[in-house]
Length: 365
Image (cartoon, rainbow, N blue to C red):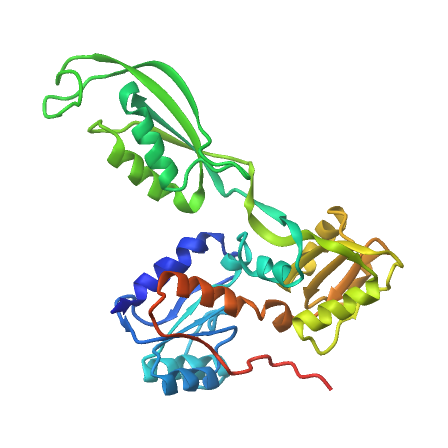
């Protein structure tokens, strides 16, 4: 038996909700955290047809990339598609969980799936996130340093770029005096105590701060653990929007257009003027990625592959890059496989299927 909260924990352990954009509504859309899950249907979008597909399979959970509920839901009368989907999900007792921009913002997420589809190497986040790191400082008696440090590392602290187990230590002497009702690890209640201690510093991603603090307090011998948490302005190279990487073998621009069309199965590619240069470096962003055009140019990419580019935004190429709009659905379609693989890794013997319903609202003539 698997509870819905276990599945949510697995999803958000990879892409915490704190990484989603302010306008987004990722997370549980419909359902009860404690409900027993009978099967999972994975889709890009939720529609009435998708819910019917889940019902026929005997599944009571749909996991989607795009949320059903974006704005405020004031009624559930069935006057529009969102209300009909929510009403049907409630009536059929089918839960809906969505992982949207939080999965856009991680290495190994939506944009990694795109980059892998193109066979890009040397992949890097195109626009790394800021405000996603904290400095954690804790004071530890010398003999317990390694125990506490390892507990913090095991909980996810100490990652800087391609390096892990990163920390700094400085030895000194701490003082404290416990009240008469205290039970100090060293010293006596009511008496000032001087203890040789190590100041241990490391970095922690914002979503993992609580987990790391719990780990260090469990491993620390003191009754009351002294620690400090500081905000950092450093960027986090493991999280952010878009992706940039290199083709293993450069391609002619027209050949690359055909390659992209084939790899993503798109009906049409809208693009700016070709520059007559080989394509070596590729920037990309799943979904609506036009906000990253200038970042793609600054990265030195030859092309920028995304969706939902508006007319005037194509002018931003300005002969410095080739913008290729392959469509929103087409750029994000492999998110389904991403979710499927993640769920199968955590629940290998559970009933999980990819939806066979075509949810792309755009057709090509």
